Image (cartoon, rainbow, N blue to C red):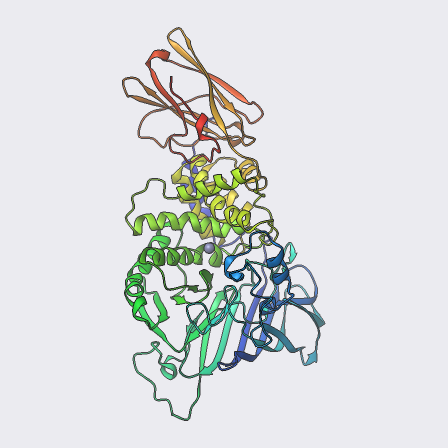
Length: 613
Ligand SMILES: [Zn+2]
């Protein structure tokens, strides 16, 4: 099958726009919130004016909001799941393996409820269903029209169990993610009103205008740009504002445009450092004022700028003017224009978590895939690109920086616990199977795509994918179609076989026999998934010869990735379990025949991949 890959590159680059296909639509939202936080009892109340535009072709009679904090109550869905899953998240159970949610007292549990909602001054009927509230609209929202909803809400910040909450293990007072009534996304698949059971978020693209009022001694880190730095100080302005002794609180006004979530954190002991990068992006660093953190958190700052430059180069330009690395939460979790990470780590580990979470700005935030449905597209792509970034930042010079992802994937296959990556993030039988499917197998999906279409085409695909789908909700099909257009290869089979099933890849070198001055070689496909085959033959004089067997279903050949000549053999199709060809060399001159010398094909049994006479 002859078809030149690279001709497609430049052609496609011209047709790129930031638009998805005709017919694509997404909802739009603008939140204007005013929130009072009581730092002595961790209760808060607020109002939210929600301007919601229906770009769908459907009339909407009701809308839904996430009320995530209600997961942190004894007897919640999250609590039940925690108690019934065989491998609970260790952060969520005590030393005896018992649910920390079940042990929460009334004044420690989470709470978030709407106290009222109205549309054009008509009070709306509300149905609170734990982490979702259903709001019946008084006036149906027609296609291509906008409505304004006025909400009042009250909440209690839970003791930190997972991701957000108060009094983290490292003593951060407030890690405020998933804290406000957040509109559920509606798209061509309908409402994504997932109850909060374990993980992964999805939101409506839009704008936030948030005013937070709290104790004046707390430094606030947040999504968006602070609008009143001169009144606030706290590291946001060069001058220290004069605040009267009698004034107990400060009101912080943040605005963020074209994001799909809003996170904030606050602590009276935050150090706030800033670094303006060459690209003019302000990087903020918020961490507890403790001696043991200073050195690593100072050294982290230049590395963060380097990481941004790396992602700009390899994916696309970071589109906001600010990013904040905030000590908080319980590990690392990505949010709009910010991340919450734990801070007391070794330097290498701290850089590693920063790189991973910052990479999510591209693969999750700006390319806002539905994490519930396609967790591998954000966690996997992030794992892949962050392994490349760490390789460069830490000067590791590993030719296969993603190799740990392959190891994880192989361990999952061996365990027998693998489930297809199409499984909803909350529905995997084990946290183990979810984690490896999302992080490791997701990274393998990309690294292995480099094997299939070539690393250069993969690199171009990532950039094209970003350019075309930023600020939307791309799907697996959007990604694979981009790879197809860049490479000229048909790749639907790869998306189907590798992500929608738990089938595996296993090729073997079968019979090798002398045939006069040639050698007859038979390869066997033992796994259910077919692949194109890279093969290298090492001769006894140590010279090598590269061979390539195209996969019929691709209708294309990968460009030669070696510096040497490559022999392209005839196609091999999926239905044929074996493939025989002749090497134009005497068997006695062959030292080794090796399938996939670069190790990018996720072959679950490498022991049969080579022939050594
Ligand atoms: Zn992640």
